[in-house]
Length: 333
Ligand SMILES: Nc1ncnc2c1ncn2[C@@H]1O[C@H](COP(=O)(O)OP(=O)(O)OP(=O)(O)O)[C@@H](O)[C@H]1O
Ligand SMILES: [Mg+2]
Image 1 (cartoon, rainbow, N blue to C red):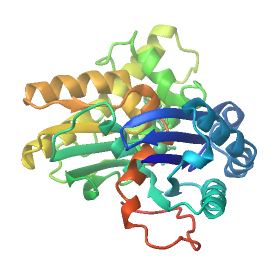
Image 2: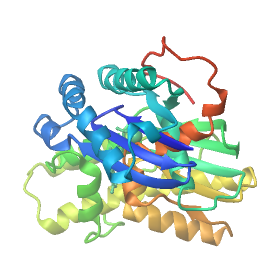
Image 3: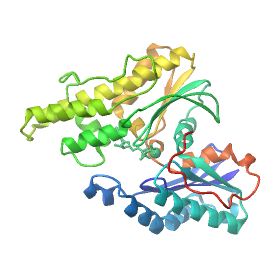
Image 4: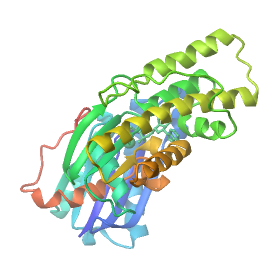
């Protein structure tokens, strides 16, 4: 089945054409990050207006790159939530218009299911797995016994891991978004230079907390006073902060894998692009005798191929045209 995926939940306008839920024929992502940079974060009003400008050209490009026309498309999947309402509505209304005009089945997809399934494109993932979705808005741990059956084991009680990266980067004057910059800086740093805390790491629950860690970095910076850092000092702070985040994520994920006899762990979402997380999770999972799967970098970030993949296994359940489909800013999976 040839499906068109559409994703506009935050600040990426994305469209993709995927065959049979496995073969990505095109995966076009137009990022607005440069427009939001000067504000230090995503501005919802700007994001929705930019989606409005980009959505048709991005869909057109996805069809062209896949070498297909709208006439070849057999169904559409669009991110229905969670995300920014104004942003989601642009994708939903465009998807509705195309589906209505072409009389195609339309599926409203949960963005988090998209992230989870992004691991399944390039890997033959055995079930059950423990899936860690770690992004700008979420840090969720799921037990997955079957595709479509997601049991939430734990989540962050405050900041998401990606949010902590972005806030710490801001504190250090490194700009927005912070994840990539901290990842790069940390490579030259000593990760045990500063003993930042690992909140909730040894608690029995699978919940996370990153706001205390961010505050610990803030106190460290305040105590030091002078905001002029040498490159080495910055790298040490970045590496020490990152090691704390990675430690927490790896320990909780593998503890869950052990408790639920998972055959593998899979990590997805923007922070899954982090080089230290990829390395540490692989190493520790190997030590536990199970594989750790990560999507390639282009599938970690928000994209529409993952939305088309999630559509594939839900499309047979579509009964009537969902004319009343609405955006959902919050939508637990
Ligand atoms: N290499 C990296 N290391 C750490 N964090 C990273 C890296 N690359 C990106 N990030 C972080 O990933 C986050 C963006 O991820 P993503 O686009 O999946 O989030 P989102 O879509 O805004 O949130 P959600 O998926 O929860 O709705 C940002 O916080 C960014 O700093
Ligand atoms: Mg996302």
